[in-house]
Amino acid sequence: MKVLNLYSGVGGNRKLWTDADVTAVEYSRDIAEVYSHHFPDDEVVVADAHEYLLEHLEDGWDFIWSSPPCQSHSRFILSGRNRKPRFPDMKLYEEIILLQTWSERLGFSYCVENVVPYYGELISAQKIGRHLFWSDLCLSSVKDVPSLKGFIKDYCTVAGSKEIQKWLGISWDKNIYYEGKHDPSQIWRNAVHPEIGKQIYEIAGGEA
Image (cartoon, rainbow, N blue to C red; front, side, top):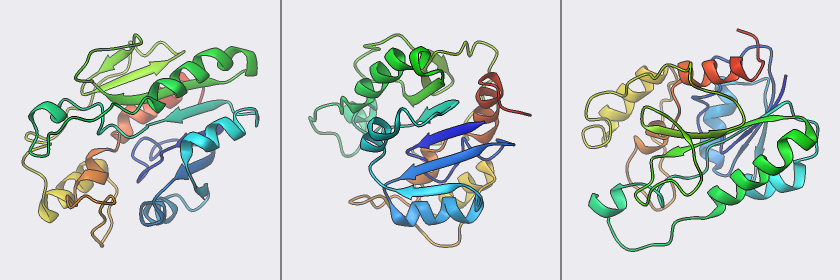
């Protein structure tokens, strides 16, 4: 199955996919290095995933997965330590609308993942645990993998980062930070658990 994996991060959602011809797009070179190490057979593109999607939408994909940045949609904007007014990044909805419109015409399935937003759902989604999914697939059979207790507040340290890596089954020796952020566990918290990614991949037609 030919798969486009956008905002691929460290590859949590991708870890248990088999027989997949994957092109992964990640903006951060450091994070792309982690992904490439764990999935050396995937083509990894260091680029803006939003622009890549539009430019390569017609490249014959069977399945497109997108996990756009969640920070501007998170409920922690209202209650977190760094709360401040900001616009939600509407690229999330641009991608949902694009994929909804073109998936049947171009013959691919899609799944867009993000957090439960502080402002409610602007486009109806399917909820699985802490995630919302916008997809042409019925995901009602997907079973959640509960996060570690205190997942957000109690794991914002190097030691916490290592615990989340164990939970995901993806490890890395060096500490990696998002630009402007100083939480070494954030890139790992943003990953979709491999068991959830596997279930959705199989519904899309991937092999177990």
